[in-house]
Amino acid sequence: MSKPSVFITRKWPASVEAKLQILFDATLNATDRPLSADEFRSALQQYDAVCPTVCDAFPADVLTVPNKRCKILGNFGVGFNHIDIQTAKAEGLTVSNTPGVLTESTADIAMTLLLMSARRGAEGDRIVRAKQWHGWCPTHMLSTDVTGATLGLIGFGRIAQAMARKAHHGFGMKILYFKPTPADPALVHNLQAERCETIEELLTTSDFVSLHCPGGPDTKHLINAERLKLMKPSAHLINTARGDVVDSQALIAALTARTICGAGLDVYENEPHLHEGFLGLDNASLLPHLGSATLNTRTAMGEKVIANLVAFFEQGEVLDRVV
Image 1: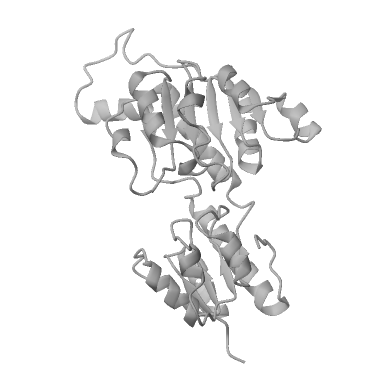
Image 2: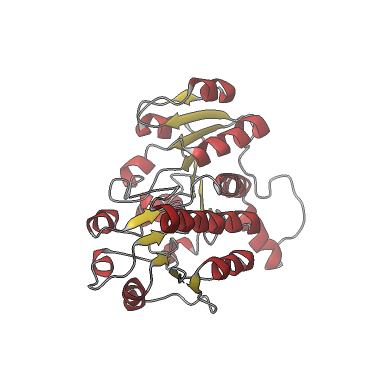
């Protein structure tokens, strides 16, 4: 019996690629070259499974290619707003993702950005490298305290909860959160967390606002000019969720005018082609989508994809179903 054919759109950790080649008739992307929409269409016609990443767009005009052989998209990542889910469902495609295994590493990056933005870490690094630092003085690069400050979380899933634990138990931060329904009482008690009834309430009372909501039409530009105006002038915005949750132009305007103090970003609209307005801002700390970028986490993500593919081809079901 022949092995299912699987197409991997980007380079994965070596141990995962080796396992893929044992279990499947796997075609790898050895050069890690970003692929085109036509190449994705061709892969859907030639392979039993296609495994995209968050940087691979699968809109309706790709998914509706005729003569599809593909039956499953084994997504390498938790987020799936790069896939037109309704079209995938209509086309009879199963879609899986990789929840759970990237929680701690992404929360670590959110805390890293919070600290970088609060303590002006990226700006300080640039000053030292440019040989513009002339020694210590009492008023040089004064910044914002993190310990004891208020952290507001928009969304309260796994990653937000992990960040809340690190912030509360590690830095003594007060935790606020917004989600449509109250969180688990035991979790709330452990974190001494308070639920805000609205996003607006959270924005006006938080020293740091961290975004942990999914991307997509419902959350596009959730943080816009009007909501940025509600934040404290001393507040910082942290985004490790999806770039389109924030209106880039509105955030750049707020950072330029210093109506908010700073921002720490790991994701961007239209990444990797972020708005160039961010590049000249000393009060923006910018990372290249590193949320899950540890070897252990990316390996675990690949293992999750493999487990879903094995379950699908052996049992007709997946462990982590999106549709």
